[in-house]
Length: 239
Image (cartoon, rainbow, N blue to C red; front, side, top):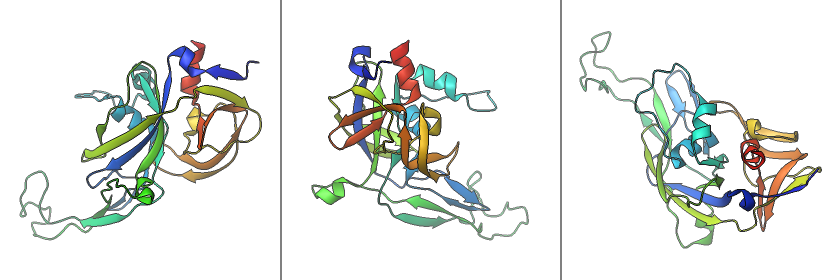
């Protein structure tokens, strides 16, 4: 078995990215009754759609078709995680967001909607070294000669996201039988090997793995970066 694959030989580039939300970021990581909370972790499917500029204007489908969609996008991202974050709670008001009226509630009474959303506060990079470690860190695999874009939008309200990236020069993927802990969360559907330990993050459409240790799988090692190579990227090398 060949235990080394050069991704660059297959026209695959790898980038270390850090995203900063320049607006209040909201998507429902979990929701109980009318209380919605956003966790400081972004699913890699959402990142791939956003960074790949893929969306539907109109869709007649009743359920997502991730496999078909991801096959059309010329890149693939790992999940993104913020090690530090703060939230702002925004309560609902008495105005109907569709009609902008206050007198069309089912009871006919002008009363506030008892619920709230927990938004992630905006984050801006500065020259301070500790502040540079804020934001959402992820890795991006690009299947053509393009570079990552510098801005995108994410979340239910399309919050503006600023992206800073650097290319990882070493794209040699090595097969490791011993456990390796990547420097990023994992999507369990991307794992080819065996997960020996992990901490779950339960968000839709399915859970992610934080501080996971994986063996019998492929990784890229470059300085402080330990990047797990997703199954979808390995399939590109075998095509």
